[in-house]
Image (cartoon, rainbow, N blue to C red; front, side, top):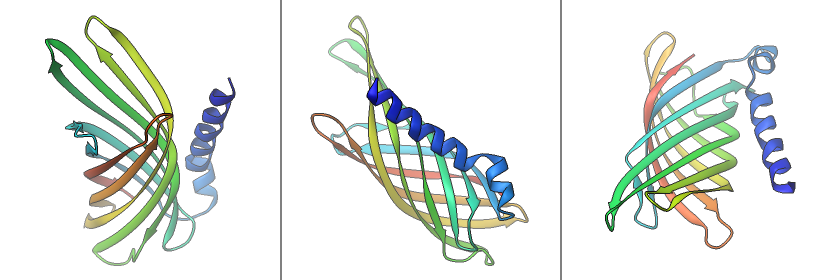
Amino acid sequence: MKRLACHSMWLSLVLMLGSPAYVAAQNKLFELGVGYQFVNRDDDLSFPFGVTVDFAGGLTERFALLGEFGWARRSAQQFGFRDLRTPLHAGGGVRWTVTRNHRFQPFAQAIVGVQRDRIEIESFGVDSELNFLVQSGGGLAVRFASHLDLFGGVDFRRVFHEIESTNAMRLTVGVRVR
């Protein structure tokens, strides 16, 4: 119960800080990004299909509050059984953009949040767990229309499991609307 309350607090904070009313009140830039993500964990598991959605509300010319949601999936056959793994994450943090006035816009970001890992093994059932995560990374956004950017990024993610924590590298590509 205590753990559920902690996770509910984090989710409420992310939703509040990323809400349109909060962002609009700042009279700053708002961005919504949608993209593909590929996640490769340090235990030789890769998740070739994934989706990420982020939203950022400007605090200053270069800093923005950031909310992010992501989903990935991996399906494999092991010992004759189908093994389906699905991590889902949500977090909030900050994004720093070097410049917004140029076509090429390098950025760095840091996120804290939670990740729910769901494992389904055929004939054995389903198991899931919710863990704290920290993610940092950066990338490049390229303006190709007045309100559209293409972006690509690389992130390092650490998920803190009870027994042993895991690290992952994440590659993202997508489109942002300003």
